[in-house]
Picture 1 (cartoon, rainbow, N blue to C red):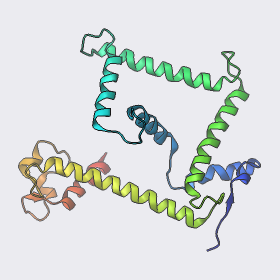
Picture 2: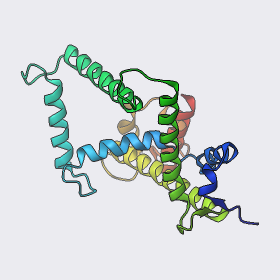
Picture 3: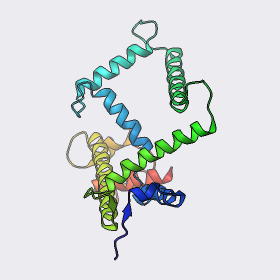
Picture 4: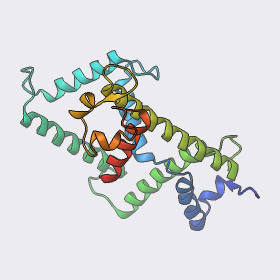
Amino acid sequence: MKNIRTNRTALWGCAGALTLAIAIPAIAYGMHGGHGGHMEKRFEAIDANSDGQVTEAEIKAHKSQKFSEIDANNDGALTKDELSAHRKAKREARRAEHFSNMDADGDGALTLDEMKTYRMARLEERLTKKFGKLDADGDGTVTTAEMDAAHAAHMKAHKDKRTKRADKRFSRLDTDENGTISEEEFTSAQRGKTFAELDTDSSGGLSKEEFGKKRRGHKHGH
């Protein structure tokens, strides 16, 4: 198959090229930036020493700091009003920051041009970042092979994440660590299909495969 080579400079040359640029992240098989950006900010906030790793101690310290921020009267206990007030303050702060970022001349009012400029700058930033991920060899172009490789890596990461979650849930229920989940272990925590329906081999325990079917069925049912 002939390689489709997309030049980075051409992405911004004209309106038609911009349309092509917008298509790139969609073709990149679900590499969405919004959620990832939020998670990146959270990670950086917790990673106190900025070493690129989050330790259990850092997580606890971050939670303790958040608790103190919410506990307005410093009585060591959180009320519903304090939680509500904290959420409201965070929302207002985010809106104010967003407005300030768009208000280029700082006059306290937004023009259409300011909104357009801000949106286009954000779009270009996201596209540039995603383009860099796709352009594995750094030559300023993206080939079908690079897109296929990005897709394969994305799907593998997604599968690995699902497997890890399933294994974690399984281990949490398999309290005696014998590799199966007994009816007694299962009954109190599970919803959806009955244990008997899931225990297809009537062994009295759920294998990881049987448990996985339960999880998929529960997810599809919702």
